[in-house]
Image (tube, rainbow, N blue to C red; front, side):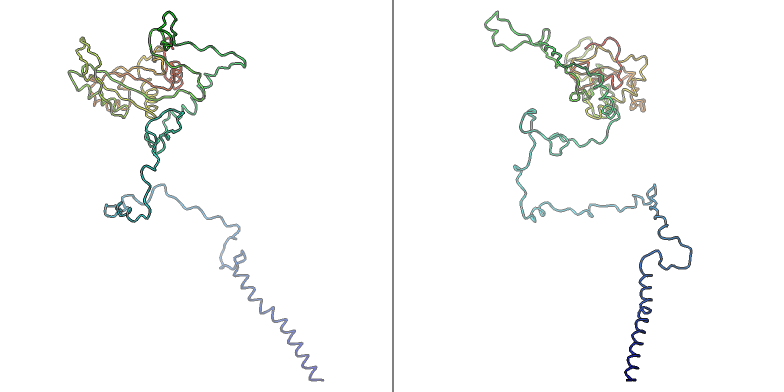
Length: 371
């Protein structure tokens, strides 16, 4: 009995000792885990360091304004370094043959009207026949026109018509034949009296038909070029310097004995500027050329061809005010530089709308305004 009591007492002591020692053995292990975990209580060397929670975010990398590496240091690529694949070998390795040319899309060759079922793609599509890449820039005058001038024109041209107002009768422009002769029956109507040209109708300006600049045409007429062809060289160089487009030489259509010219003589040059270049050229005339002309009243109010085109002219001494000519004026013989006439082609259908467009862009008019 005594031995059993000692044995049980020893077992109780061993169990109690195990319960006490187990947490002590696990304490260093838990401490190591706790210290190894990423926390703000992680042990650190004995130095002054801010807490992670209050540390500032890392600063952004400094990007220098000037590149440190020069482009001249890059290796020069030669023709031997470029890997060129033979198209015949590439075609021979192709498993499937490409579709035949007749299965590919081809835009129509002619534009047959807006109601035709087959419409050509826009000029911005590379597949189009009249594809023109760009635009690569936005002229200042064009940007001002679309952002400010367009809304001003629509505001100025707005005419309020109360509901129920009867429409004005359409003006009869074609004349009918009388019944004085049986041969006049079923004849087509005659054109306006005085001329057979039927001008387009002037419609009210809406957001659909706001007039815009389509092109600018410049032309020089030099009768002295028959005796001295150098006048043509000087005229072509001046127009090409101003517009950036190579001019073409024109010939005389009729003979004039007083000037000593015969039909077919090379006596002039002309050039046409389209699109964004037309806006840049008009902007140059408005802000750089017109203000320098002495005692210039503006464009005559009677100018126009009744179809939306406005014309004016520059004297020989006015050609030096173009900045391209003014910078190198000594290169051009002053006695050979002739004046030029300018025709502003717009999308307007009447002189009145074209004049409104020009006045909104800053081109002044003087005298009586004739539509």
